[in-house]
Image (cartoon, rainbow, N blue to C red; front, side, top):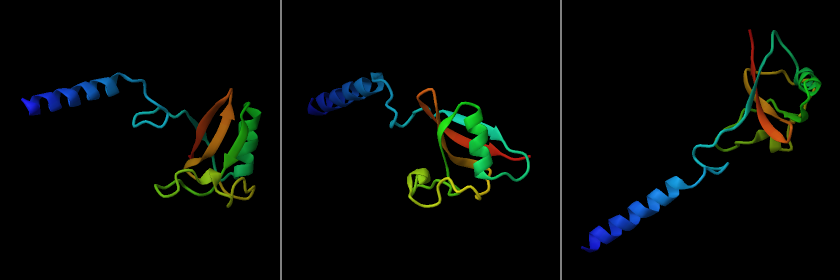
Length: 109
C-alpha cells in the first residue's frame, strides 16, 4: 500500500513537470541560429561587417570553438572580435537582431 502511494506521487509530479512550458535553460530549448555561407577565406572582421550590413548588432565573434568546459567562449576576455582571425567552419559567435540573440554558424564552399 505504501509503495502504491509513493509511485502515485511520483507519477503526479512527473505529469506536472511535463505540463510546464520549457524554459530557455531546459533540456529541450530552441536556440536561434544564423547560417552564413562564406566562400573562400574570410576574416571575422569581414563577417562582422556583413552581419552588421544585414541589420545585426552586438556581433561578438571568436576563433575558439565552444566546449563542455567553455560553452560560451564569446564571453571570455580572450581573442574576441580579433579582426585578423579567420572565419572557421561551424560556430563563430553570436549576434543580435530585433532583441533576439542568434548563434552564428559559417559554412565554406
